[in-house]
Length: 327
Image (cartoon, rainbow, N blue to C red):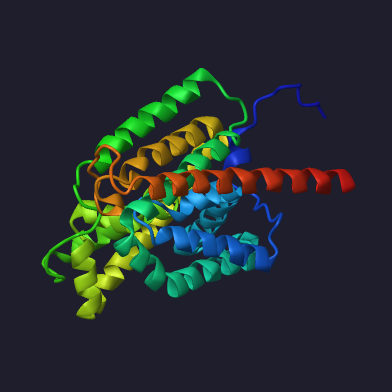
């Protein structure tokens, strides 16, 4: 027997089968998860705000991506015909954690969509100001998650923000206009689903706005209204495959370039502020204008949103420190 030399490189056969990331289930009480999901669902209703942003602020972003990746890897094992591996990876998914989160998201969409959309229509500037402050607070909180801050990370965030800011300017309105009817080929629905679902994971943009940019928003609504099950199933299939592929890529990137990826995600949130700028038309437009009437309401709500996010983060840190000391 020979001892392995210190610092020896692992043999290729040691990595024949990639292990799914271990799921972190701290703070996974169902009621807590319902609350987190509720906040994520409320964010998903608003153009320019995504559930990924809220997940990042709440500190569950990487756990969410890991859970999606683990489920996706189980599907991959099933497609390969490896039943044992499928069962093993399905068992590694924190199902209670995921189900509680999804339930909270669904509850928020059902309970808040009517009232929130009414406020977005009647008070677009005021609501834009509120969400502008929330996202600025989220950027401050998220930057604290960077393990080793460095100037190059700030550069990455700024470049990502500028690129996303320009990307959002490709469309004047955040809402699609036109007849809700299916005119595109079936494969377009598959691709739209694969691309739009990435907004579920990425902070800073909603899936509905991605569909607007792709010119598929009214197409999907038309398919829903006309109950065209075939194209809707293709849309869902594309969404499922897109989510699986993107979660795998994001998990790989986070495991190797954690701070770099986090800086880029923060940049996406900064770039999304283009949609949330209250003037001239609030959340209805990506156009930018000088602050005007109404002025006081949006500004005060922006300050309130910022204080709430930073304050909640501060309280969470205080309680976490007390819990650690007690343990």
